[in-house]
Every structure is written in C-alpha cells, then in structure tokens.
Image 1 (cartoon, rainbow, N blue to C red):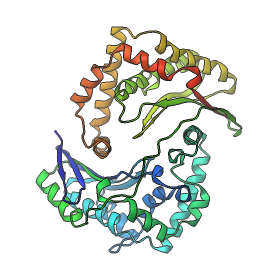
Image 2: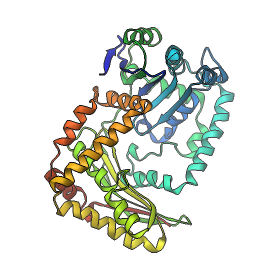
Image 3: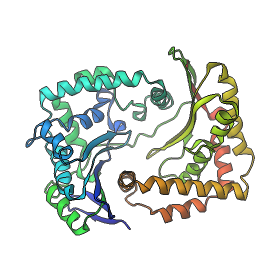
Image 4: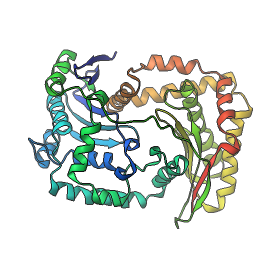
Length: 405
C-alpha cells in the first residue's frame, strides 16, 4: 500500500497512490518547541511563519502565489515535537510543490522588513490565543505538569522572545536543527512513484547529509497540582489529567482505545453521556491523549456553568473509577473496538489527513501501519488491559486539576 525510498542524504519518502485529481504533499521535520532552550522559546513557530517570507530566489509574494496561484493551498504548523510544511494542489502541480518546499527549507533568507511585519502577526496570534480560554487552558495545564522541562514550553513562545528574535537567530536555529536526518517527505495522490522519487532526488537530493544538534535525552518528571485561576470568564473551564503512556510504550494502543471510550469524539462517549446528555451541564466535554516520544499526557476538558463544578468533577471521577473497578463486557469491548476502527478509517478517508498521519508516523517510528494492521492491534486489546491501565493511571492522587473561573 505504502511505498518508501530514502535519498542518499538520509531524507525519507513515503507515498501512497490514489486516483484523485488532488495531491497532498508535505515535509515533516522532527523539530518542535521542546527542542528550544528557554532563551529561544517560540523560535520554531516563528520560523514556521517566516519561511514563507523570502528565499534566495523568491520574494514573499512569489512564494504565496506559487501554489495559491494555481488553486492550491500552502500551509504549515508547529507542534511540541515536529514542524510540517504542506500543500494541497492539483496532481499536475506536484512538481512545483516539491520544488517550493525545498526552496523555503534550504534557501530562506528571512528579510528584515518581512520579519518585522511577521513579528506583529505572531504577537497578534498570541493575543488572540490568550483571549480563548478553551485553548489556553491546554497549554497552561502542560506548563504546570511539566514544570521546567522543555515540553512545558508554549509553542507560540513568550512575547519578550518574539519581540527580539532576529533573522540571524532564525537562520542559526534552522541551520542547526532542520537537517536531513530529521526530514520526511509524505505524499498521497495520483502520481507514478518513480516520478515522485525522481522529483525528490532533483529538489532535495543535492543537499549534504547532516545530523541535527537536537537533544531529547532529558526526560520529563511530571508534577501533580490542583489550581484555580481567576480569569473572569463567562464560562468555567476545567481540565483534569495525568501522565500517560509515551508514543513508544507498548500500552499505547490500549490507552488510545480507553481514551476513546472515556471522551472521544463520538456522542456516545461516557463523559458526553454522563455529563452533557444526562444533565446538560456543558456544551463541550472531551478527553484527549497526547503521546510524545518519551512520555504522554491524558486530559479531560469541560466548559461548564460555575454552579456545576463540583457535580461535574464528581461525575468525571465516577466514570474514571468505573473503568478501573469494572471490566468491560465482551459486547461493550467489541463495540468500542468497532467504533474506534471506524473513526480511524473515516479520518483517513480524507487524503490530507492520511498524508499528515503517515508523515508523522514515518518520522517518529520509521514505519507506517496499514488500517488492517492497526485494527489487528486494537482487536488484541483485552478488557483486563484496559482496567489495569485505568487502575494504574486514574487514581485520585495521580490526577491534576486546573480551573479557570
């Protein structure tokens, strides 16, 4: 299903062919906000914005027009552990996408005037984010739980850093960390794989093999906390969470299924039924599982009326304890597995989602499982495994709480 190739400089390629007139392509770089020291917090995100502002060959307008001008979409994002630059275009324009990716990754010049304008854009993004407590609470929760560890870093960075980053800072960070050993080119679309390899060789193969200076050897030591912050919000926002299995933990599949049962996107998730459907206490209640390379984080978020705080927290605790104390029956477990597999299949039906999924997987694990392989792993999960995980992680003295009021 998936086809692979590695360039002589170490850049890896993953490709899946389909019959669509649209192709989705991107370059994943295994560098994110956790790779910044305190002085450079926010620089990975600043670079993600700034690579579109000029290269040795193009000005900002020419970069934006290169893909958008033929009806495509060019974009990028930064996470704790990776950066991605990607595009969606008609399949006939794959070549211009790959050529542009190489140009902005290897030839960005960060013109002074453009960087000053983008600095203001990013500062406004920070302001917008701070005005959105339902988003901000996730980053604050991570900051409290990870303390001084780089995983605590807000991806956007503090304003004081954003205001003083120079083009030289951007060039130095990019030169040190955007290296061939940490790059994956992911493509899903209608193309011949030999041509894909040829184009990648042409535009990416000329750059020498280089190894990143990134060091993730410092393992996080999560803290437990119980905090209420007065933000004068109309709605109370609360988050309950705890450490969880890492991306490389053999319990990851079982915990992913457990998370989906508790508060996944389906309307029949246990939290949605117990809190929203039964009592109408909230509009949004959900759980999320974020596995990183050396740790993981589980959290439950709810936006509620202040008067419902204690009742809502008690309902959350009750649902978590149910999963610890009572084994899922055979019918319940089978239904949960079917639901999870179906959700993954629907998500990957969108080719852009699939491109991003396989790019991230190949970047992190040097392999990509097919849906059939993932289904086999999910089917192997037992009710005892789920109960054991719930017992190990959901004890009251292991859970942290953050409330905005």
